[in-house]
Image: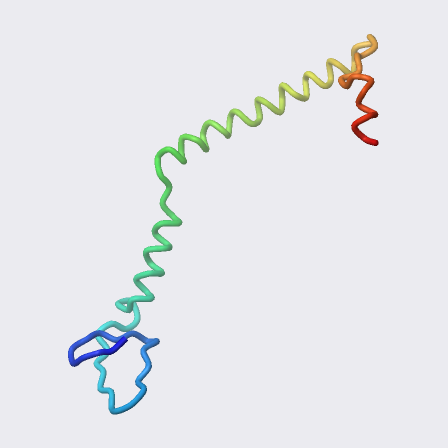
Amino acid sequence: MPKAVGDSVFGSSVNHSGVLLVQATGVGKDSAVAQIVSLVHQAQSSRPPMQEFVDKVSAVFVPVVVAIATVTMLVRVSSHEALPCPFPPTHHLLVT
């Protein structure tokens, strides 16, 4: 991209011919890369309110579901009745 006097250049700009006189206007914390890194860090560290709500719900929901599944399994295993087969006899046809 051609540049004229007073245009901004970045660290990846290439001078193909002639003399190039540049003045550093942003270094360290003020550079474009540092600002991008700061914005990415800020975006990753902040959490929307909906995410916090979902985290609270899942912190209760998941253990409750696991507990119900465990109790159900223990009741079924400890019962002395013959448990019905969950698959119909035709399930062997699906394998072959």
